[in-house]
Structure formats: structure tokens, C-alpha cells
Length: 110
Image (cartoon, rainbow, N blue to C red; front, side, top):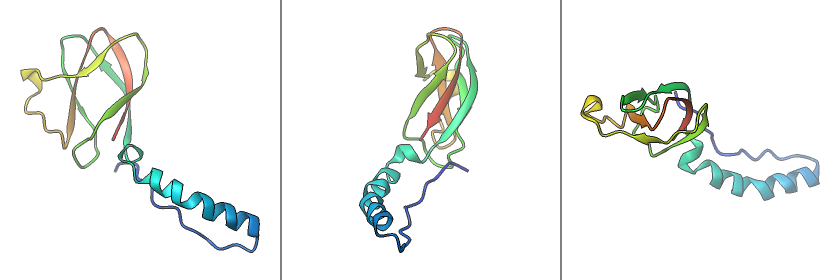
């Protein structure tokens, strides 16, 4: 199951300052939580080798909108592969990745 954040719930409080702060922050936080990037999944330790496309299961239970490399152990360019070895694409289940050099990465997929 992907990581999903829900709207901030306002809880009335006797402390006026705390209640005021909560009211002030609730709308901006709710707007941030509605952005697609906040509802994703972290995929770790994905080993990639150049010219050997890898099909990575993203487990979002929907088509992914994008991905960000959040960690890598080498200087490498990671890109989506259109190679025949990983077709059909199946974006509701997988991301097809390739790289410019050997690398192990972690991705945030949303």
C-alpha cells in the first residue's frame, strides 16, 4: 500500500495560541497533502547496470506520475527505458529503468 497522508484534522483546544496556530497552518498543510508527490512510495536498493533495462515494481496500485532518485551510490544518469526487453510498459505496475553506469539507487515514486 502506498504512503498516503490525509487532511489535517482541526481539534479545538482551550489554549488560544495553539488553536490560532492550528487554524493558521491547517489550510496550507492540507494543500501540500493534496499534491501528488506526497502520496508515493520509497523503493530502496535497486541495482542497475548499463544497457540492461530493469522492470521495477512500484506498488502504487495506480499509474505512477513520476519518480525522483533520492539516493545513489555512484555518479550515474538514471532514465526510463523503452527497450523491447521491458515491454509492455505497464505503468500501473512497473517503472522500466536503465542507467549510464553501474549504480544502486533509491527512488521516491509518486
